[in-house]
Image 1 (tube, rainbow, N blue to C red):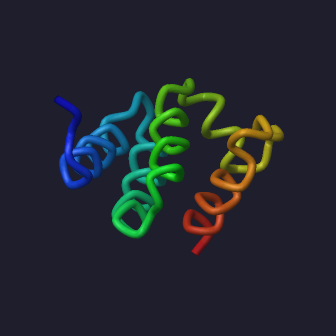
Image 2: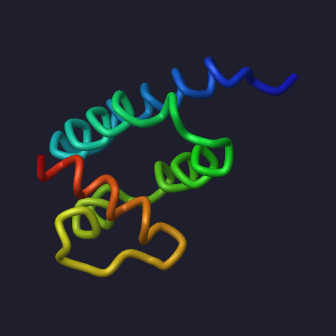
Amino acid sequence: MSETRDTRIKRLKMRSMRRGIKEMDLILSAYADRNLSAMEPSGLDTYDALLHENDQDLYQWVTGQVQPPETYASLISDIAQTFQK
């Protein structure tokens, strides 16, 4: 049985909060709370895949220290804007 949209969003929010480093917990949980409910299924797929990436890489992408992979470029840009507000 596949998970419902609500269950998926709850799972993604939980995974956003329970990262390896505190900075990513704060950045991703704030982003998830503000944006996941309005995302299309394809956006949720990309976000879900992003959560499988290493926290150190994610942090460097979000803070602009390193260019993110093209797959995540627009999502990382969106997360970075949320983080900088």
